[in-house]
Length: 259
Image (tube, rainbow, N blue to C red; front, side, top):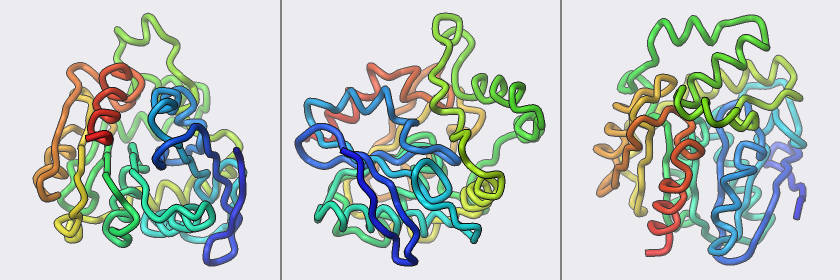
């Protein structure tokens, strides 16, 4: 099922619902729409009703040329839950989606049953930044070359030798340039450090050991900062651990949510 609702400021928000069972919100990475989850959401088909959201600026949602923020994206998620008349849901966010998920749990604790944070960061001065080399590689102006850079950051060479890599994690190509810039600023300005101890829901933190886009130390910081959070690191995996270590990762998430 596909639908639309409106954010508090009137921006149209597109959402997608598949399956049946307890609701599970899946939040994508920066400058990506719901297609980020196209393959992985299939793993939850027998246990959950999965809900994805096209962030403002992506997919079929509105694309206002105004400042975006991770707390603002979190409010858009709540607007979708309201439209679907869902009181509380499990929330699984990866990359920037993990930043957004933090704010959903912080600002709306009653709406989150359990929380999964993948390949993400607390943000701010306490976060461990990617290297200067990685930052330079991401400044690649040629779109084709940038796609190659992103594939290398998302997946290990051994995995890519047997898989082309799901291109659905390389960004929403329909995004206008201004929206891409606003997503980048929103992600870079995320800082939930002071608020993380307020998260009281059960939390699972997941990360790839060889993640160079978001160094694994960020997962350790999140697990230390969020009360009683659990941490699992996938050996050899890079940023898109949820694909590269999919069999293990999806099983871990399903088990955690089902406890």
